[in-house]
Image (cartoon, rainbow, N blue to C red):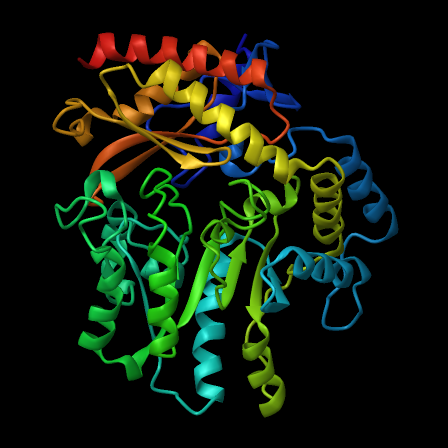
Length: 455
């Protein structure tokens, strides 16, 4: 008789896509509760990856479940172009209250990739409506990741995700990532004069400022740089350059938004106001898909004054169930002070992470903000030399960690986009200090087993 796991693995053969690795999963996710996931044998795992970066409130939050059910009992879907959507209207107001003060309008969609694709098109049409149709080019950074749709992938600088689709992508220029651990210029801060930021002005002048529409960035790096945190001067310099050349600054907060770094939006750590913010993932805590593009009032004003409609939209955008879900998530974040808690707990999180893991010879650097941490793996700590990519080091560590009962998220391409492994951890905001200790103890043991195999 075929057991349940074997049956599930056989059915899994009908699934197609990048989320299916070369090694089939060895467990079924049966249920979730708080910071824990349980498999078909009721074995418990600490969800230290948060989804990844999605499960901000933990699993099975009763307030969110109730809000979703109440909305479904009323109406689950209607086409937004034909009806006013009260949950969505309230949600837009609530988002504007916590966003940077210059951002006054929202466009909703269903995923981070869609949000970034939308932002590209908003920037383009904004320049067209203001009489500068030649501004079309979107600049970004190498080792960035902004999504899998063709437009979002065009602005992504994650080489491994791009390589098979290069002929189909916009070949827009990119500047180096501000990752000090692997400085593209071989310089040291602060003597570097923040060359990685000043590179933006150089490339704008090289391609012609009259053609540049926008510059895309993640405030704290995601998969492409394993939670890279730019130096304090970086974003103020970027903002000044964008203003000088009438280039929109687009802030991808798909990971960082809604509290992950200890602020409502990650860019707030640098005191800089972007022209557009995109966000997804944690805004609904993983309970339903939703994303948002939040735009500066100057952009909305151009559209309203010209009477231009934005030629864009998605059937499911802003559906009432997702809107009600996001409202419930914001309620919990505010009433329980979870964004502030994320900031406070983040200090303990990094202290314990470094205390328990930094001694390992394969741990090159631990970096990030709030409850967003990247653990870079190296085979030579002194030389910062990565493992051979063929060894799939980060995937192997994730597999070992899972056997120990803790979840992390593996990523690759950390060094110049073509080498380097890391494990990202980003637990729910409700995690406690004892569970953080336990999770790092489990990762400590996993790294010890990993080293026996890889060193």
